[in-house]
Image (cartoon, rainbow, N blue to C red; front, side, top):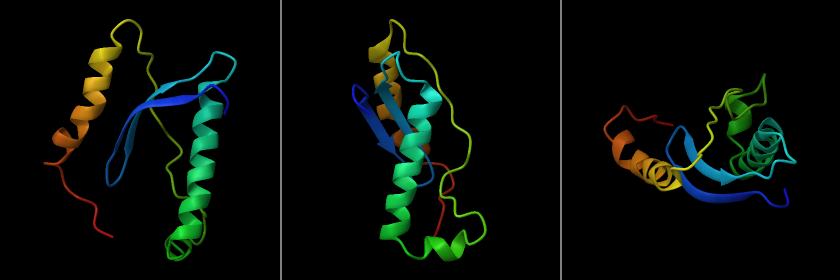
Length: 96
C-alpha cells in the first residue's frame, strides 16, 4: 500500500514482529489484513504442503494481531523488535 513502510522486522518460527509506518489514511486493520492475505497466498504457492495441513480453513495466519503506537520512543521500540530474536530463542520451538 503506498506510503506504508516496514522500518524494522524480526521473523520468528511462529510469529513476526514489525515496526511500520502506516499513513493515517489507512486503517491498521486494513493494512494488516492485506499483508496477511498477500503473504498467505505467496506461502501457499511456495509450500504446497500447507494445503494439506489447512485443508478445511485454507488459512495460514491466525486471525489475531497486536498493534501499538510508537509515540515518542521509536528507538526503544526498534530495539525491542530487534531483541525479540534473542528473547524468543529460549522458548519452545515449533517443529514442522
